[in-house]
Each structure stands twice: as C-alpha cells, then as structure tokens.
Amino acid sequence: MEVNDANVRSDRRDPDGPAHPRGFLPREAGKSVHQPAERSVDFPVSVVLPAGGTGERTGLQTPKQFCSFLGRPLISYTIQAFERVSWIQSVVVVVAEDNTDLMTDIVQRFRHGKVRVVPGGSTRHRSIWNGVLALGEGEGEGAVVIIHDAVRPFVDEDLLYEIATAAKEHGAAGAIRPLVSTVIASTSEGYLDHSLERAKYRASETPQGFTYDVIYRAYQQCSESDFEFGTECLHLALQYCGTNAKLVQGPPTLWKVTYKWDLAAAESIIKDALSRSACVITGGSAPAAALAGALREAVGALGTELDVIPDLMGDNARCLVKERNFILVSVGPSRLPEVEALLTELEAANRALLHPLVVIWVRLSDSDEPSVSGRAAEPAAIMDLSSAAKLRNILLYGIQLHQSKKWIRSNEARPRFHVIYMNAEPRRHERIQKKGM
Image (cartoon, rainbow, N blue to C red):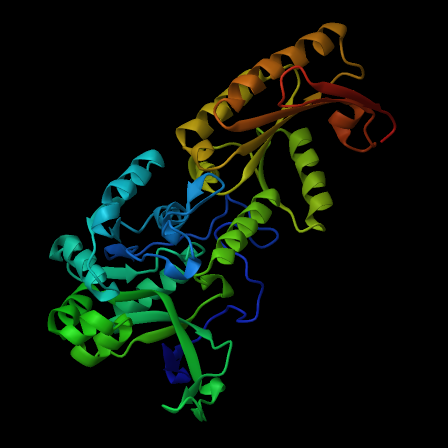
C-alpha cells in the first residue's frame, strides 16, 4: 500500500543507510553491553505474527516462513527478535491449520518461551483477526498489539519502541519506507493511464501497532470484502474507528523475504554480522583489559566491534542472548574452570541451538617463558574440552600468550611472548613462537 507522506513521524534513521539488521549487527563504536540503552513501557504489549502464507512467489514447496538457513527456520529468527525485547509480553503466531504441528515443533525445538500458536484463516485479515481474538481483552486496559509479518526477521527494539509508544498515544502507528519505484496505473487495454508523484507517497510496512480496543473494533466492524481482499490494517483502523495512524520512518532492514533469492540474502546478512562481532570477557584484570582494548582498536578499522565486559553478572548477562561470539581472557595459571563456566552459561542460554557458536580462550601467562609441564598439559586439556564443546555445537579455540612480567606490571614496554594456538579439532594444533612483538 502507498500512503501519503503528510503524517510521517520524525526519525533519526537515514532512509538511504546500509540495509543491515540492527538486531544482528554491532552497535555504534564506543557503546558497550554494560551501558545499554534502557527501554521500558508502562503498558502491556503483545505481538501477532501472521504466518499462514503459502509462499507461492518463492517457487518452493515449503512456505518461506518455514524455510531453514543456518540450521534454523526463518520464522524462528523473527520470533527471536521479539523475544529479546523484555517489555513484550507474548507473541501469537498464526499459521495455516495444516502447519500448527510444525510450528509447535519449532517453538519447542528452539525453546521460544513467549509464543502461542493458533490456527489462521483463509486470508491475511482473517488470520490476524484470529490472532487478536487469541490475545483477548485480558491483555489489560490500554494494551498495545503489534502486528508484524513473520517473514521480516530484521526488526530492532528501537523501532518497536517507537511503534508501541506512538500507537499508545495515537491509537495506531505504522512503519513506512520510501517508494523504490514509480507507481503507475494502466488502462483496461494495457496502456499507461497515469503515474503517481513518487515523492508524495510511501510504502506501508510492518511492524504496525494498535491499542487493543482500536484493532478489535476495526475487525469487529469490517466487511466480508475487507476480510477477503484487504491487506492493510492501518486502513481498517481509519475507516472503522476514525483512528489516523502515526507514521514512523523505518530502516532499510524492513524488507520482506518474498522470493527464493531473499532467503540467500538473509542468510548472507546474518553470517556477515556474526563474523564481525564478539564479546570480550576480561575478568576485571588490568592486563586482560589492556589486551581487549588493543584488540578493539585493531579490528575497529575492519568494521568489527568488540564489546568489552568484566564478567557476565547483572546487566552484562544480556550478552548471552545477543548475536555475539565470545573471547575469554584469563591471566595467570590455567583457568579452565572459567572456560567451562562460560560454556555452561552459553548452553543454558540456548545459544548453540540456533547456530554454531565460536568461543576463543586467550590465556595470558605472567612468566617470561612457559614451563615444560604447562606446554604439555595445556593443549591436551583444551583439546578435550574443545571436543566435548563441539558436540554441543560450540567451536572452542585456545590461544596461550606468555608475556614478560615487566609488560604485565606496567604495560610500558611492548610484550615479548610465545603463542600457542589450539584448534577446536581434536589433536590438531600448531605452535608459533614470536618474539619482540
């Protein structure tokens, strides 16, 4: 649907910015996970995800919402984007009745805790109406319902917050994007009739938000023709409730997986994002923090961002549920228990269920030369731990640095160290010695 630009909410986003998913990509330089931007609302918020489409345009037998990449169905990525938002209470996924068992299996397999699965109707509006009814008025007075396409996996919390608060204030709100192509009308004979002035119009996207009473009354009053042929929820709110939606400029990532090649694009975006982000855990050690700072400076120019935190306590525990790999820096004698504890935390957070996870353990020794016993025991121990972790879909690597005591105490001189790399593959490692670096 095209909407007029007169009611667009001012937004900080660059409409021509890079089309990357904010939920998967690193944050702005300098931001750390232990200094998060807090978001909260004082009203109930729930989500309806219509997922009853057949995916005819993809040309695949499997509906696109159930197509898998990186070992996980597309709809699971979309659900995760909402489950990460603490102030969203529940997610209702509406699927074709024939797919309810499949969807229930996905919810159980990937441990989606906020999800309810309900059967949909024969059209988009009928399915959304079923989802709204499933929420019920018990959602609370002044509750907001967010409606979002199940095949738009890259939606971030900032946009959801703007949609929810605007819907609470105005009764309805929706994301929009600039039109990519000029819209024309044709005659019945197939000739050009007229075209629209593209600058005056916008494409209506999801997410869209409504107070529960507005969306309930709109569907309660809409006609059979609306149910059968309509697609735009904002129009129903305006037509039947007189609610003029607030329009919010959305980011380029709101694109919808429609065709077969869109699945490949989504997979590529997620892979690229995961390869360029990591969380460094220092244990509060000054040498470890110095190394983390040097790493962050070195990789920053490559577009990679490292979040540096002392531990996974308190607010820092949120790093466990974000799309990050991990670097654990230990100082002094062997700290294998620290590595084991991190692996246990990651397993409890179900991170390795979603995609292979990389953990790099960097151990800084405060001796000038590694001991013979240390050289022999450390690789064997990390290899055993790596083999066990791989069975849980976690790839564990080890890097052992032996540095001079002078550098560790003062950090005034450049370190002299030996490096031992230990691969996650059992019994495969190499030793590289470097001096004067």
